Each structure stands twice: as C-alpha cells, then as structure tokens.
Image (cartoon, rainbow, N blue to C red; front, side, top):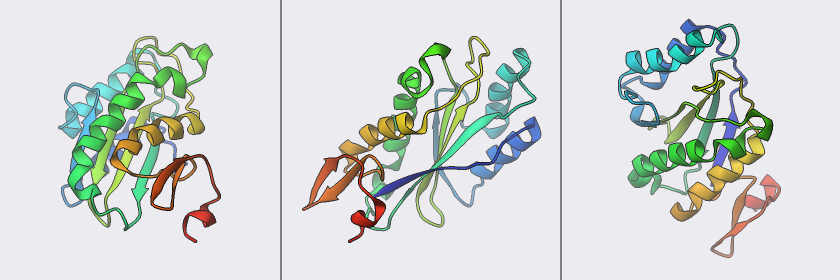
Length: 185
C-alpha cells in the first residue's frame, strides 16, 4: 500500500527551496532521482534550472514548489528492486498528464517535475511539482485528486495500491476509494 501526503510547507524564497533540494540529495538518505530537467543529478545545477523560470517571469515572491511524499508500507519489500523505474515512470506520468492535474483554464505547456527516492528510514518518494509553467510563467494549482489518479495508474503495473485510488481484496488489486480502516482489517 502506498500513501500520498502533501507537505503543507511553503518554500517562499530561493534559499528555502535550495535547503529542500540539499535535504533531498543528502547522501545518507538518497537512493536516486528522476526529473524532466536536464541536469537533475547535481543539486546546485538543479536549483539553478528550477529557479531560472521563477526569476525570468518575476515569480519569486510566492511558493516555489508543491511537495508530496509517497510512502510505502512494509508489506511491499519489492520497492527496493523497482524504485528507479517507478521514479522515472512517476515523472513521465506527471509531466505528460500535467494538463489533467492542473485546472483546464491554465492551459499548461510545461512544468518542472522532480522525484527523489530516499531509502531511510524506509523507501519513500519525494515528488516536487513546480508552481509555475516554465514556458509562460503562469501560476499553477494542482488538484490532489487528479494527481492521486495519475499516480494510482502509474503504480498499478508494479502492484502497489494507492490509498484513495486502489486497494487489495482477496489478493486482487481493485480500483476505487475505500475508507483507510478497510485496508487494514
């Protein structure tokens, strides 16, 4: 079972965002990263690429990223073997479906996305979505239910149920939202 949570923290300055990136790339926790950015393997260059759009469009006084955490329960030990592929699939799914995740009126052309996998204390994924369209500078809003739907579809081939999107019953993965207590009865 996977659980998606939104961190309600705003990264309101470039320094806040840089601290987040350096935390995500901490060698003690870091397993891998995936992004649609060109040089995402180096935190300094990633920060420069991400922040460039905010400076170019004068969008540096508000939140710099939407930050989600995708965590897994201990029953899914095979995450240790599939995490690099899952991270790549998460980024490509979010990037290719960004117009479904954001309101239609925004007409999003492109959006920076980053998925960083931490292996401690247990495997979990940090998913960052930029708050602006990197081509137009328009501010974005992310519908969490739409994001959950995209991530749920992305995780299905790996047999991971996503709380609020899919669940296991009688050894079979099923679609649909059920109360969390049902999942652990």
